[in-house]
Image (cartoon, rainbow, N blue to C red; front, side):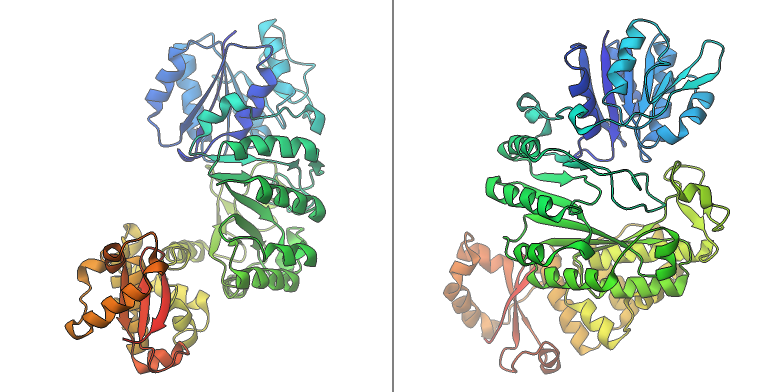
Length: 556
């Protein structure tokens, strides 16, 4: 029996951890198997052709909110040309919807609910023997009388979780983002999350180290831990991090952590590690007390802010903080309070997300209670609530776009702090007013390059002299076209050439000629130097375009 494991990833650089678990679970008994990864933007006709070319007996799809619509279309087309094909769906998007999907989509034969490492190989055995899987935990299936049969979800032990990676498969992960989990479950019970309340199960550290050593030896560029709260056991988390630092060659690592439970010991250690190796994603979601209570989320804001501030000051770990708009009891004022408090921590990235009411969550049962208007199609985003109107959520989407353009991109690293102290002290209000300008000009309907973003901002702000200087610094940092427009005053050329020569070691491995084309002096006004706390005689900002930063303030 030929088995295909398939999914549509959200990006070409991503890889599927779920399929590799399933492959490991079946490879001994079903050697004629194939793992096929496509991406959501691929031509579905080509995907059908690639799968059909292998003439499979079974195709199993890993389903998520970003690929379920396309996956259902694939299933329908495959069944049309291969009517004897057995199609299995699994994944977080289909488990809670299993009854509905089997009822509405005749092409689907089975849906696996919950963890599949035991259910999937057992189901393959049942298919091979042409019997109903009514004794296999976690399977929805079609009964002979046309009804939908089901069994209780399966929950595997850590001993039953197969190793997803082996040395023979490393070549297929070259240049990919690779997912890894050292634990399953989550200690929290957030009502909007499918993992809420699932008891945490830790893989043995000996196994974790063995699997990570394999990935590190392959120089995987980015290993993303999918543990829902990586540091819920602080001592264990620190042991894994220390192992990664000791064993890594080129890899970087991404963790989802809870910042308000970081211990002093871990914090003191984290600020000492080399820059650029760790990335932290920290889900703040909201600071509004009524909202936190409604979604059953425990969070100590003061401790979180203190920990993030300490990490940000060290500036050696990339910090990605999340907020969610559309949560219960969160009106415009409450959202502004959360946004302003979080962005003033200066995270490297602030994601303004929107509530997704996922099937199977506690939140899905509270739609009427909270007046949630939810999109009927994945990703089931909230359209309005008792506290935020449809128009307000639409405005927030424009503000999110501006947040990405002007803050998360690093475009205005020097300009935004000035704007938020001298023009509008509330970053949220500033983005709101800028969004009104953006919408009035219909700018939200088209994409924008960096030059256009600067032009729109200057047209909106009409900057004063200090802001003009700061924008000049940011343009020199961020615009690839800047060198073509830069003109060095003739009377300063000799002094600038001497400066570059004296500091040539700082531009290594760039040659003098390369440094001359990538390092630029920006003359600053006296009031700008005062704002930047620089002496009057250091009236030059030396911009390193390659590193997108100010190398120094100097005098020519």
